[in-house]
Image (cartoon, rainbow, N blue to C red):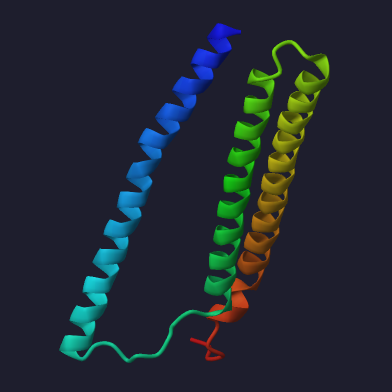
Length: 140
């Protein structure tokens, strides 16, 4: 049991240490994009019109939803692990923790399988309609 506790604490510690890099990378990317937008405005190359189409907006929505699912999965895993650690041999609490962890893993698998199927179908539809989208109607 001590090995599991030690491994859990190390996993959580490393998760927090390495996740801060993602936050700093995100802010650096945002600063870079803001700098590019300011430069485009000053040079007169920014039309001020939003260039987000339906596909881009859908992609952003899916990205945000998957991020929320990942956060929920992490929270459920930590909650299940904590319940398991404080169970102290109580079979009812141990089974409850195992059920929470098992169900969160199954939920994550279902969400990513749905994403994979959607991405495959979407890619197939886009590839199938590409000749129609690229044609200008003028024969060479």
